[in-house]
Image (cartoon, rainbow, N blue to C red; front, side, top):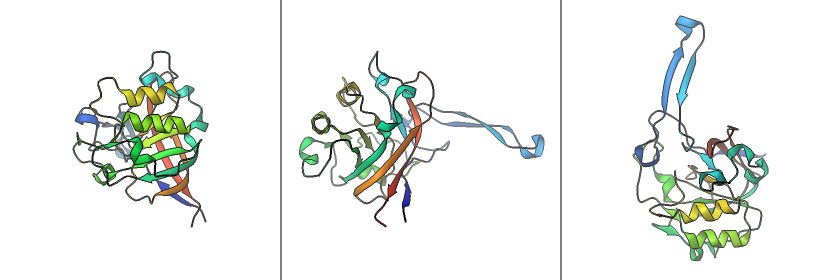
Length: 210
């Protein structure tokens, strides 16, 4: 029996937002009592919770989120447990792990231990440029991490630029604390908004080992 594991960040008005500056706002516009049904407006940033960055997030002529092939976000995935790392994930940290070409690489770190509604943590674990270069050399399909950013304190945004220049989508805002390291099938589907640089997504893993 296949087990489905939800690895998405729950969206709420109290959820963690990047640098605490991208709040989610729910406004109820209709109620069952007054209108016979419930309806709600949502104001949300494209980089809220679990989301996918498309090349146009960093590259002027890059593809927008609706232009990314869904095949780049669906397929074999490897969850790598790097919970012992306190700063940057480097090539040296990734080398001991078996990573195959064409896989979606999901980086599990101590970031997943933060509550989904905790204040933003500025010193989150991130992926360094050397780790990016290593993954590009391996020709992986996409890269995901368990916080609202994949890099920090990088004036030139090397991590984003290097990955997106290769049209490797970046999945940010995953929740992996409940996921055991290993191999799965990943399905990550961003909302098909037209012309934007990113979009929130629902991400799941299919576990065939049970």
